[in-house]
Image 1 (cartoon, rainbow, N blue to C red):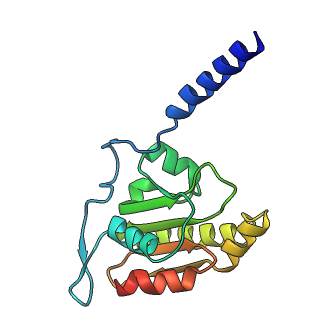
Image 2 (image 1 turned 90 degrees about the vertical axis):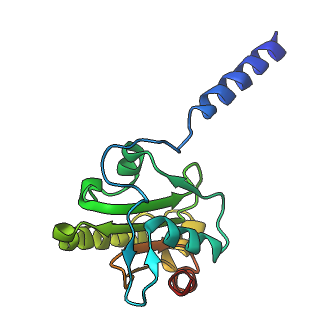
Image 3 (image 1 turned 120 degrees about the vertical axis):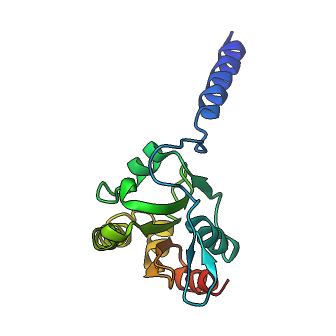
Length: 171
């Protein structure tokens, strides 16, 4: 009887976790990962490409790209409003004690100042109040934020954030 209950509990847990898929084809709201902007050097940027470059240039524990707008909104600061963005990409390790994440956004032209302020506030929160465990504190200490020549604003939360940002921008 105990074995049967254990098997049923394991099956229920597996079924419930299969519903935790973070990839969605939600097409409402801003054009996720589709708009391109030409940078000063003539290279084309998208939030997705920049985030992928960042992921390729460092060691990241189990990162996923999150595309479901409701889920992304819930994870970010309430001040980062997705409707104010032309493009965005968020990679994170959702079910983990790690703090690592990559957030790249391109604000709409008339929202650039508000988005920059919201990103600055979010960066301050992540680096000062969001880190509880030693691994999180190491990630927070190495975190960087910045802006690309193409007008994208990024936050990289990783213990080697500056190196990753340099590699992302050089790519």
